[in-house]
Image (cartoon, rainbow, N blue to C red; front, side):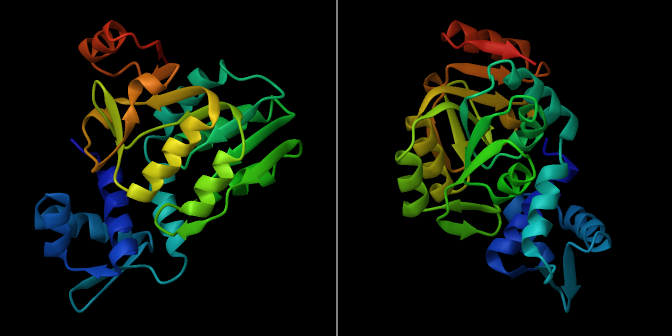
Length: 253
């Protein structure tokens, strides 16, 4: 079941993407009841993230980026911190690390402050903002077409920049996973993720139990592309066992 925080994130992302929607349209889009949407919209209004007028709901006019990112970043914070602690054992000073626009990677940045000098390559503006504040962390921001809902870049320029480097480690998460593949709702961001994997020597996938409950349209790739899967210990035991049986290196965080 999708958590209220994740559902509200989906509402804001939908509003940022399409401009405005009715309660009924959002209910159909998210496959929930209209009453659930009414409650979510009330919470989002109270947080000044959306506005409602004459039956139409819009993302707040001021700072759409912060609206969408605030919901994404604030969900499952404890789990993200745990996954970051599991990922950091594979990193060391002097590495170049490619970070996708997963908010899980934001939790990793505090650990990187203890591993300087280090180079971060990312397409995510919200990650770049934090890296800029770190004294001895070198930043390579890909640029490209800015996607407001993701607070990140995608497109040919992004993919070309990534293809021009060779990172030591790639760390990413996924919107959804099954036993064999990982998925994302955006075709353009999916292409960026594939480019990052192709341009990295070692790759890590960080996933929590919520990824099994979600679906997304575009298949990013095979789980076999990852050298390590850092997994939330709350994932079902049979799922973890099947991953290991399929030959994956699973590290429980």
